[in-house]
Length: 92
Image: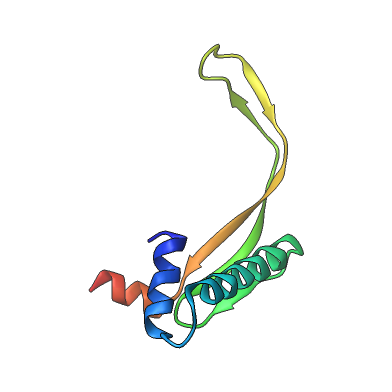
């Protein structure tokens, strides 16, 4: 499902609202989630899952083209942990 598909699905249930307004609401929701993760905050959506930010330590890697060793710096990455309800639905 793409963002456009999501907007159309929401707009199908909220027929009183124009697609433009639904798209704006979806954009606001995603922006709020992005801002929260940028502030290192946890996002919990009951029944769906949790979004968190995890730290990855620096490590030694290898350039696959040349085979030389490369230092990979530490970084923070977004992480999603699926909720129990969603896991059951998918695993039917």
